[in-house]
Length: 335
Image (cartoon, rainbow, N blue to C red; front, side):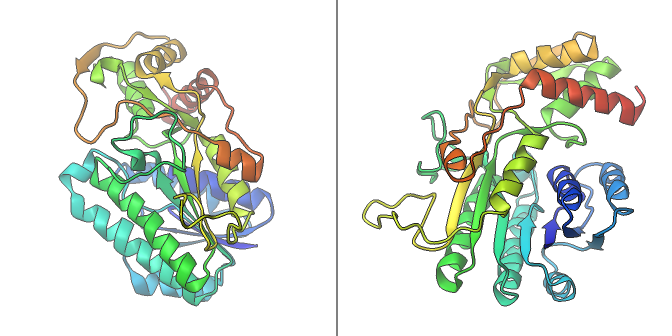
């Protein structure tokens, strides 16, 4: 198939592109290579993709409607994976407009292009952050998510609502994926694993929010990508069991689905740091701090819907995943 991936120079997008190319698909990567984090890492990911047969690339933003429309018209994708977004909870407190531009205006451009090009299936990144102020664990896709605690989370919830509207009005099959704390080789420098590894190796103190007490459902990159591929290949249709008198947020009379992709084995941050210390072979100097605005204390994914519909459940343990990341980091940065 011809598959368009936005955010193709990103952590998940580049890993997904390799997997799809391995399977014989044609891939058009679309990314603006912005400087939210080190563009050199994005370029390094892209450099590994560009020599591969079946891969092509467009450098442009989601907000650039003309560029989106041109990319769709030229490549004629059959399916689309929208991973491009302005990411990060904390940055949304500093630069909220970037989130509206990329995550709302940009996503509308994707939806419109998919609608007019009769795309078979749009899979898009949502986030575990949509669960916001919810405290019932594990987080299930059937739960209400009406209390976001960051603008980032609000834009991701908005994406799900926008996708449902297009599924309902235009019959566009859409699947939203709520990713839970993705980590692994080629990861994002603004995420805890990358930050902690860099600082511990450099002998610098690390900032440990919520005094290390919160738990996260850390999900390994290969597991995330497998979940994306499983759902991408399964085009949703109307749910015959949908009850409009007791509507589930995860399904619909329209061709619409939402899934969690998480490891469903939450780990306390303090334990995660211990695993990094073991892999690095060096103790961290910790600055224990209170919880940051916009953060949530705990996350845990209920993946029952994913297992039911795709037969897949993430399984890589954090001790394996952290070792793999640290080995990649040492090799990539020569430390």
